[in-house]
Amino acid sequence: MAVSTSVPANWNLPLFWATVDGSMAGNLTQAQAALIVGQYDSVHGTIDGSGQNVPVPIGSAAQAKSYFGAGSMLARMVQQWFNVNTTQLLYCIPVADPAAGVAATGSIVISGSSFDGGGVLTVYIAGQKIAVVVASTDTPQSVATNLAAAINAAIDLPVTASPSTGTVALTAKWKGLTGNDIQVATNFIGPAQGEYLPSGMTVTITAMSSGSGAPDCTSAIAAIQVFQFLYVAMPYTDPATMAVWNTEFGFGSAGRWNYTRQQYGIVLNAIRGSYATLISWGAGVNSPTMTTLAVEPQAQTPIWEWCAEYAGLAALALTDDPARPLQTLEFQGLLPAPIQQRFSQAQLNNLTNAGLAIQSVTADGNPMILREQMQYQFNSYGQGDTAFALATTLATLAELLSRLRQAITSNFGRVKLIPDGTRISPGQAAVTPTDIKAALITQFKLAEWDGLVSDLTDFMANLVVQIDDQNPNRVDVLWPPQLAGQLRVFAMLAQFRLLYPDVALSGGTGTIGAA
Image (tube, rainbow, N blue to C red; front, top):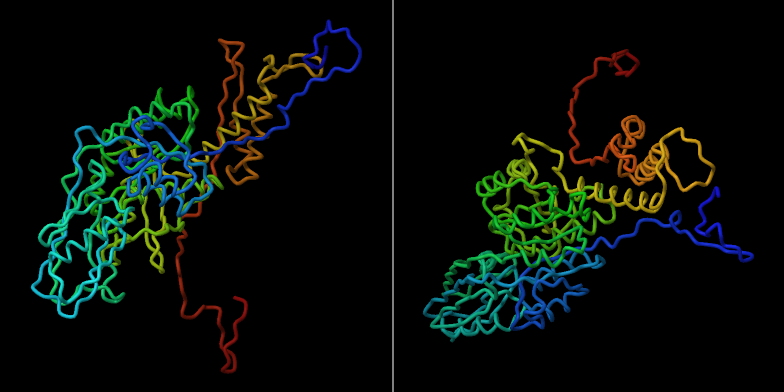
């Protein structure tokens, strides 16, 4: 039989017997799901210990607050995610506080003997504004009591407050180092926007500190083995936590980019620090599958929320077009550092050379992505390497490899493998290296049309498909695509003239003629 119909040759009943084969009709479909990792509040949320380390789909910020507790790290991350990305299939995995962790604490001290004329005390906690009316008859103790009540009434804040003799004690709602990142400030936008302390009032802030410990994410990682998450918002930058996520999403034998798993994905996070601190930190990390956004110390929004929006923006844009740069994509609702305390252009450039992604601020005050730099800086010999310098490289590779896998498994899922030149009847369920090569070239042309790759001629010249000389059932392929680049730098020499030499003067009138 020339054509393989799956109707056996000994089937003798008349007349019409048809089988259906969809292998040539389908196209690649994948949800490109994303994941947010973070801590939850078991007291105020509906997720209890049984839901810990279990990935759960989340469709709204309200659902996240109900599940994980208002003001919890995870609920606040989801809120920021939905500020910039409302369409992605999103999962969250709640992790427990570190067993030996300590919650961060801070304080706001109100002082002054009288507040003549009263006014408004404006406090920012984690970038969220709290305003308390101050009467001229108030005392530091009454102001502290009112401020603590206002803080506790704002259930989305990541802290609880307790007043005592003119002092408001603040405690993070979870344990761990991340609580130290909760910023506390008065009058952040300043007198120009009507924010100033009441007359006679002094406010002394003790920054959040003493939080210690980081969650153990090994159980969470074990729970997501069967899931493919192309984009993961992971807010922890301590060495141990980063190491386990880098292993999970790495190229090693146990990693998602290894041939045994082929699940692919990028991990996105953020880190706050001074220029010197970040340069030093960046020099000590090297990951081809993780990108970390650098944020100035004075930015008011917590670092885990920068992480969530960075991942949300990246997931939305790279799902639409994995080869298109993320530069100028704007964050929403994040408070950047004051203008005089932002990184300079030279500092931002040096941060990218230390393996850090960077952000800047638009004219209307919104932060935006400048460069989605990966942490990858060195090859296995410690030499400088740019192979995985940008998130677009991994996103494009993930898309291309997924397309190839779909094409090969659909077209050649159950065929015979024969050498080139073998004479067989038409319609045989058999394939030669040349047939496979043609399929790969077709896929390249489709990807080229979609702007993911370029240079078909060199691709065809360097593509190798051959039957393994030790195993007649195996095909070895060298697949050499040239990935699409991005317009990231427009460098121009402005070589001006005061007078071109081909200007001739005739009869007192300037005439421009041919040289």
